[in-house]
Image (cartoon, rainbow, N blue to C red; front, side, top):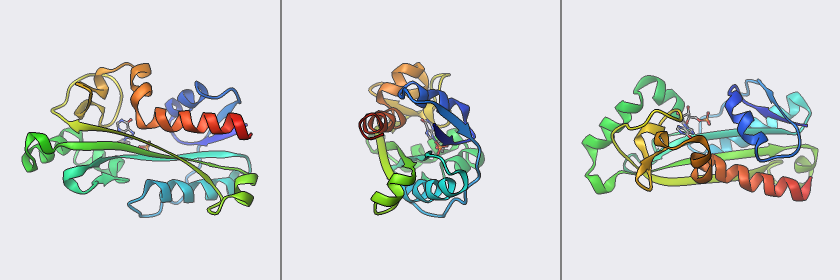
Length: 187
Ligand code: IMP
């Protein structure tokens, strides 16, 4: 049994599509370190959650990294979504850049920790990263969540894709695929 440490049941449903083993949601509030690295934030969270929960755990940290802003909002994406807002991020980017300078990426670190990784891995965890690069556009589409309406990939925003289409190209889908492959082979 893997415990996915998240407040978001949608993420648990998604991981279940990739794994045969049971996955259960657990809400555990780990201390989030201040860092510009999603890998560091999720790795520390996973070690702390594993100590608290005992079972194998999955922790993730993700964000939108805007090239013209040197990666901002990155790990602060959730806070910036609540304050500046998704449309606000688009307007700032539009004001600061020409049309060909609006590159951005979604990045995620999906981190797995169990008794074996604690023994065998230098950081005590196994990290699976995912990234998708696209460009920022004026909001379009009704699906998805967060910054999906302003993130365009191959001519469509993530909010214009259905869940399966988004998973096939998204940072989270790519990381989950890598994790599921590793898990099937090693656990
Ligand atoms: P989390 O770490 O997966 O909870 O993501 C943190 C924040 O990054 C979210 O609150 C969103 O603002 C943003 N984010 C992460 N993944 C996505 C995505 O797939 N689409 C849109 N926004 C995302």
